[in-house]
Length: 379
Length: 199
Image (cartoon, rainbow over all chains, first blue to last red; front, top):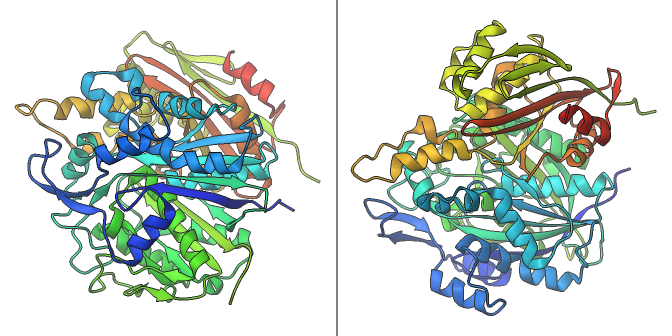
């Protein structure tokens, strides 16, 4: 029988705050990190969720004098810092270090610095700040990376190789990705509207998030009960019309968790607000019998934070789990997918025991993870 | 009683040479892009989509073609890693946006600025609706591969695993791929993987 693995520490660094508490309060209050920006990253003004550089710098100064770290490194270090400190871990060989990102320090390419753009360099820099002993493991698997990293950490612990794992995830809004998404005509002119009839594409965002994944139950917030990461085998940049990979990932996660779909209380889905992604999710969730489950996308408040999204949204989801509070799906107005979904329209107090996190990404990838509340159930 | 796991077959693509199970099967002094196309033709593989791929995907695709037959592989998971991610194509995308007077970002290039796209290409070709993941390490990490591949099989998430180290940046490339399954002669261990990697 596989040993139990839990999430027992979490943090996030976003335009809505530098702690889970602050983020959650702002989300409940209906705040959004998305704003209109005008700068040289895009020819015309655009919407995105971007961290204030000066504020980030001031917070980083509180924990380090270094002037050698990039914006992304500061975000990642800040998100890990309180979790590492509180854990009291020796960060030895039995402690894994996982880092999730799609593009890392990609802005280094602007000055032709290939070495600095290497993802391994980023991981080593963050690992060295804390002095992790074990070899960093970088997960770079498009937009599922953040939640895939949690799943990988859980699998590594269950295989007996580690006892615990610190997972950090982060990505930046950069000219590199803005121009790329723009070339796909996948960017919305207004803040994104997941699952809505008039959705027109993504709004990008930047954030960092971190979690401690461990077999030690003492401070556990949630148990990671099942996971699946299955490819659509259909198209490299568009999702499967039948939601094949997402459906199979959800089924694999539920099977491992020994849980029927009917027991899921809440879904934090991917919801990028592209016409194709949201439609695919509706098809996949209906195939799994999850169409009545309260569901939201957090991309209406955070934008699409790429390699950070899977972990950031999981952190908020677990906080929802703990507080028994559902957050409305920001940006949603009129349903615009061909099959029914129960999109959360207003914040709601609801007892949550089982929570499903899903993500999908370029390359036909999908990840689904089932979490179960740990500790006091307080029904 | 758990069955033993083996390295069923392996291939390597490096320095203009392609070997399968330790035997040299193709050699060419062409530059990387032409070398990969020549390799594809040499093995009689017909796949028009190959020519749209970036070099990293071509490398990974070619390696997987040598190990996966045309028969279905419904339960073969993909476990890949490299050191440079998709930097080879990232540089191309960066070039397309760095000069405002000569600005030409394209979705055909941008889609390949993620290292896991090659897994999508392989999955589509062989209809692998299976576990897929892409990792980055400073150097080939046999210990990680051995542990994670075994875990996928033992927990029932996959029946076989195609493992691949597919590193490519500009003219430097090395691909080392192998299939892990319950059939074969070489035991699936970290030591054996390292031995085969270094030849």
